[in-house]
Structure formats: C-alpha cells, structure tokens
Image (cartoon, rainbow, N blue to C red):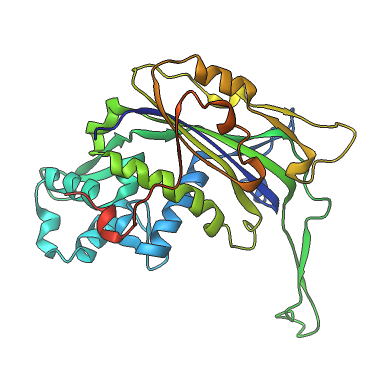
Length: 323
C-alpha cells in the first residue's frame, strides 16, 4: 500500500518536569514571555522516537545517533553504520549513491524525518553534504494553556568540597513546570516519499512507537512526568491538507485557580470533529487515546473509518530496515 497524505495531532502532558530545556538559558523550560505558553522543539519530540529505537533495537537503526554514547559527526556515523551492518570497510569508498541507499535502507528515522548525508569529493579532503527533507515533519509543540515554573529551582549536592574537605555542597538549578498539556502538529507528505524511500509500514511504525516512546523514554530525572493522551493521524485521499489541527482544539479553565493536572482543564474536540466530518476525502482516522480522553473524540466521528492504535504488527529489528 502506498503512502498517503496524513496529518497528525499529538497531545501529551508534562507534570513536575522540564519538557524541553533551553541550553542558552540555564536549561530553563522554553516559555513565551508574553503569553506564558510552553514551547517544545520538534527535535525534542523526534529524540523520544530515536531514543526508543536505540534502547530497544540498537544504534544501528537510527541515523541521528550516538556511537558508544557519544555524539559523532555524519561521516563517523556513516562509517559506524557500515561496520554495524557487517559490511566491509572499503564500502566507505564506494560511490555516493551507495551511501544514500545504505542510510535510507538501514535507518528508519532517515526515511521518516530526512537526513544530511556526507558525500565524498572528487579529490582527497573535499566533499559536501546533501540534505534530504523527510516526508514526516512536525511543527514546534506548544502548551494549550499558560504554564508556571515551580517556585524553587535550587538543588544542593552534598558531596564534600574539593578544597575544604568539609561538608560543603554545590548549589545548582533544576527548572521544572508544574504542568503543561503539550500539542504537536505533524504531516506525512506523499510528495516527499521519493526523497527517502518511505513506505506505509514505516508510517505504521511511527504510529506505534511515538506513543510508547514518550511514555518509556521519559524516565530520566528531568523528563519523568510525561504521559501521552491523544495520537491522531488522519489519512486523506486528496492532495490538500487541513492545516494545523491544534486550532480546532478548545481548552477552558478557571483562571482563578492554578493548573496542576489534566483535571484542571476542560478539553473539547467538538470543532475538530466538525472539521473532520466536513472533509469527504478523509479516508481513515487512526487514533489512540489515554483513559482520561477515552472516547472524547472518537465517539463524535462515527461517520469516518476509525481504526484504534496500536497497529497489530510485531516490531523487530528486521522490520525497521528496508531493502
């Protein structure tokens, strides 16, 4: 089955944690200073996906990766990829088309999101990189409501000081938000499938893994507190896109009370449901809901073919590669 145009709405919560720290500002959560809206980069979202693949199946299936836990440049990554694939080292000297084919065959994140691949030049010491835009792209995410930073960000380490040897401690910063309900919008463009060789099975893997990745990868000290609530992918038989699905989600709350959990928000998908009903070319709606959001959307779009996720596929390393 060929890849169709799709649009994705992903909603998850981050509670008493740091959804996406800004390294240029003490790793504080990214917040729009005028609106109080929490911002999360698409890179952070893709990192959830990539980390899950690496932790479960190994580094060999991910292009934007690390080697032995350390960040490497693209040339090193390619060389490591060939070695992990049990190919001869001389393959690194083969033509550039072989490089591109290897990356997209072996690495699912490259097929989904695209890749920057180093190419050798005609003479020694020269070369360039080619950028391939992937069919799957996400906007930056944002919270559907204003957020608050936890009042105290100071933490103390009680290791003895190096110079005094006494009971000295080191004071650092640990920035967190009380609560943030974050929404992402994404697209799957069939027009860009030829860039990376994406197939329908790859999209199904994204459907299955992204939800699980958010829940399971958020187990570090700064990320624990994440929970997915809604993953929606609508498949369109037409070439048109509806556009950012988040604008059809309505959130209301009591502004006199703090927002500390999902129960403090009223989430409505009524306008989104109406929009989906008004587009006849929408063929299938794939959806996964948390217990808290069970049926809020799916019960109102019964006129569409609704398929509940996850897909009934058994993930394995072999399934992540394409040849």
